[in-house]
Length: 406
Image 1 (cartoon, rainbow, N blue to C red):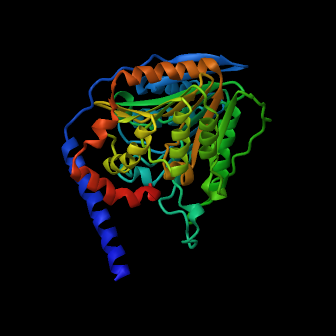
Image 2 (cartoon, one colour):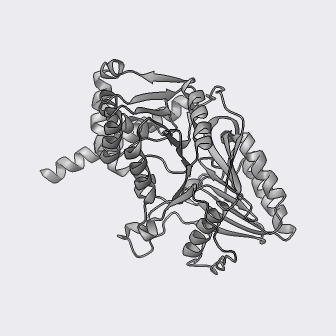
Image 3 (cartoon, one colour):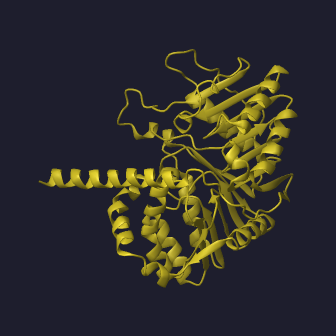
């Protein structure tokens, strides 16, 4: 009886999730996001380098393609989604041209994220070295959970002189229709992006049915910039420092915590940390999409709204477009930009990377961006939330057990 009951609950949850996804997909057909405010690329100098912040995809792509066009020695590109559309073709051609003029070109993309991309697009010129991170990577080690993480990183490094990292995937819709955040880093910090790419390449370069890729060997030594730190989630090595980074920063906050996330499904430790911060007078604000591209994730995240709102946390919902950024700023001095969402898949599952910056000017940049986004958002009030309909509360209750999976 217990087995049948549990199986029945799982079937109901699965059917509800599938049904919601299909209905949401039908409703979105033919609809285009509306324009949204953005900020121009902004650069701050930190030590011997700089950080430029982008909030509009076309601005970012223009600079990424220019960097690729000017490459002299080596290009490292790692991305989760790489669409075979106009923008995707632009990047592919730019990389092929670089390889043709003698530049070493290395690419990594996630096969699962690109299942719907044309197989034709996934054929690259011989001069480009490519790792297609497989859909299934466990082999005979079916129960080895370390081998199931997706490669959710988005990195570009050119000549070890400029590195790009953040939330933007590669594709035409992201150029103008999504609000995301990415940064361009110069100076000593670029080395950590190079090492991140090389470590992943060397860990996954072996192929089962074809010749393995050659290892990527680094020649230069690391130079530390103490105000810029990179945190890398590596499921194969059971390393997940990004979650710890967030918990430590939240617990140290005394003035404000402003967070923007595409998918917000925190574990109870993070919820409790945010509630404690609000209870000691910290201005805690969380900005999320009003409707993301994953309707089930939206519904599951709402299960935490009551706890947060009752504690004084303010929740803003970005309207009429998808906000895909993964950023936070605290107390006017600490900030982070990266690929990790606040959910289990990002914090305890996937390959991710976030840059942590201890600099007041960088924090001020992200605070300005947050204010711009907040001006294009609706604030969710506690009384409004508690007055939601019974069928919404029931749906949240049914989907609640799926939280640990997402």
